[in-house]
Length: 128
Image 1 (tube, rainbow, N blue to C red):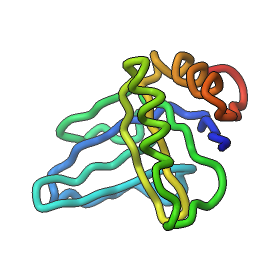
Image 2 (spheres, rainbow, N blue to C red; image 1 turned 60 degrees about the horizontal axis):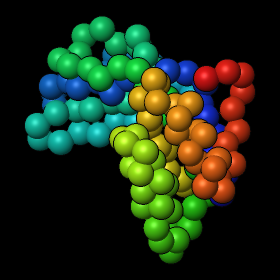
Image 3 (tube, rainbow, N blue to C red; image 1 turned 180 degrees about the vertical axis):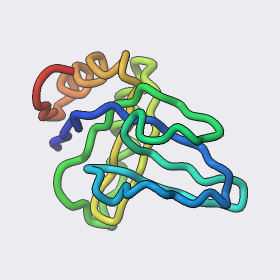
């Protein structure tokens, strides 16, 4: 299985549930928004917003390459187990096509190394 390391650094932003997104984030390479009755969470490039309630900065994103079939079982579980075995926590975002595994920036080199050691291919443009 191949994973691609996205170039940018990302933040998980927390907003009030009634927050109206005024930025044109649809032009971003990657963003994800989830709204509940309690909050609006947006994963987006670092420094994109400054009017949030709270934020967790310093994330890198590994994208599982290709389109994943809904019948596939255990992909995230296996990747998470490999990373958990070396005390690397993750934050996962899923889309219709694939999954994105977020790892703290200071742990990304360790994450890539342990994934490669466990048979995964990791494509990365430039240094990380």
